[in-house]
Every structure is written in structure tokens, then in C-alpha cells.
Image (cartoon, rainbow, N blue to C red; front, side, top):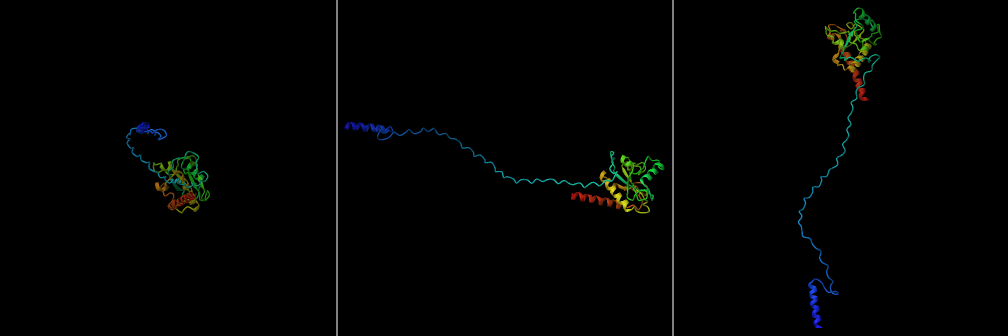
Length: 242
């Protein structure tokens, strides 16, 4: 018995040395998992975080304001020509130096006494003696946009070729034109200067450039320009209101 016991003790010691115990006593432990050899991996630099973009407030859409053009001056019958328009740059004011008259009467005089082809003016404004007071008559040249025959200065035809001739019936060396004539003249000059972009400095009397007193020493040129400017201002105010 003692020999078997000793042998058992020896076997038990061997088994324990091998990491096992006999059945019924100690269960054999599972083998430890294999470990790979340690490999050094350098640390990656931290990636920069994207900057946070703050949402901008929506931009206010600015709608440009359209500048309203003032209404064009009203045109009376025959003022707007149908032919190709000349590059007018002057408005020349005349008086007839007669107490009465009309476009037809002056046309006959120009054809007969002056031997011209037709009435030299583009417009005639009556005073009630021969044509209605303040009535604007359209001369035969205007619808055709024909140069005038009213303001030759020496050999200079500038004021005929590029000047619109307007004659008021009356002699303004003796008296001023009437209110109806001045009101009609202001409306016509306002219309023409607007249509052809004629400067105020180019609205002149015949005597401004010629050796004559026409349109008479009592013709109120400053009053005419003031009336035209008031008409413009009224139209501009109407355009702003619209």
C-alpha cells in the first residue's frame, strides 16, 4: 500500500508541475491566449477641427429706386412732326412788328416781297388781329422739318439751319405781348426745349444774335424763361407724386 501511495504522490507532483491535476481533483486550465509581439505605433497628430461657421443674417435685398422722369409737356395739334426731325438746338423769338397778322398773311408777304419759297417761321402766335389771341399756328416748314428763313446773321446760317423760328404777332417796341400770347409761347417753348433738349441759354430773341431790335425792346424775355421754368417744375412735381 505504501508503494502505491508513493507512486500516486509522484504522479500528482508531475501532473501539477505540468499545470494539470488528475481527473476528479483539479480541472486542467485552458491555455493562455497567444500574445503578439508588441509593435510601437506612433501617435497621429490630432486633426484640426473645422472652424465653426456662424450663419450670417440674410442680407436685405436693396431694390434700387427708379427715378421717375417728369411727364413730357402736352403737345397741341401739329407740334409733333411726323418727318425725320432735325437736330434743333436754338429757339429764336421774333415779333412781326405789325399790329395784326397771321401765318397766312406772313406767308404771302415772304413769298411776294421777299421772294422766299414759303413762310420763313416755323410757328406764329396770334394776338386776335388776323388770328385768335394766343392761338399757335404751325407753319408749313415745321411738318417737313425744313430749315428756317428767319435769322441769318451775315453769312452765318446757324440759327436758320438749327433754330426754330417763332413769331408773335404784334409790335413789342410799343407794348408788351398779351397774357394769352405769353402763356401760349411758354407752353410751346416748354414743349420744344424738352423734346430737343435745348438749353435755356439757347432760347433767345432775334436781336441777341442779329443787328435788330426784334422781338422788340418791351418783349419780356426774363418773364418767358420764368414761365417755362414754372411749367417744368410743375411737371417734375407731378412726376415725383406719381
